[in-house]
Image (cartoon, rainbow, N blue to C red; front, side, top):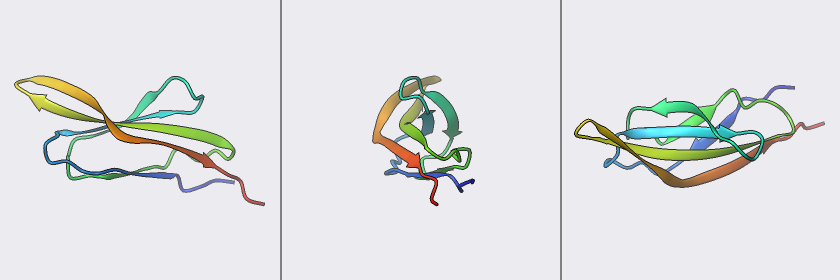
Length: 87
């Protein structure tokens, strides 16, 4: 079976340049899966998270570009989702 993905929602902030979304499927290391270059976006659907019985963990970082330097900070949202295969 396949699923439509995992929807992440976070609070937007006009004081940032964008967001970086990281995902883990093993409970350990996180890999960047998406970079969003607008502060106006507060939703992302991970359509590649479709495996049943897999636990997906996410971290959303905000970033701000100032004078050519990029500063990154972990956003409050840290979410976990398990896609469950229904019978």
